[in-house]
Image (cartoon, rainbow, N blue to C red):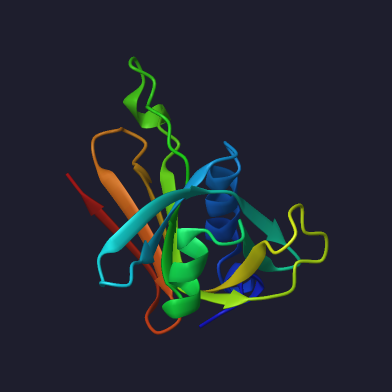
Length: 152
């Protein structure tokens, strides 16, 4: 597991592009594990701050209950469509997977809200090549490091 700052130190360009994708809109998507083991997809807001990725969760929310029971999660950036006349203009999408660690909420907007930081175990940035005819998947994890794959 790694703090976001550790990943960003090892892969600064990839970290910059991932943060940019997460910053295009306020609402992101998080996947958590329900009590019965099935996935739950929910909207969420994120914050990249102090070398960490944070999530704020409403008190009593199902996703907060999920993370307290099973801290595994996957986070997906907002996406946008490529320009119709310029397919390679698609700026891509990003994903972060890891473990939620509950931390104090210094200025909680709602009493009892939860805050977690993500211990990162995978980062993925997916985009098109310059010609717009191949999918490029760049990924990183602490064990295998950086990888880049292209496919049609």
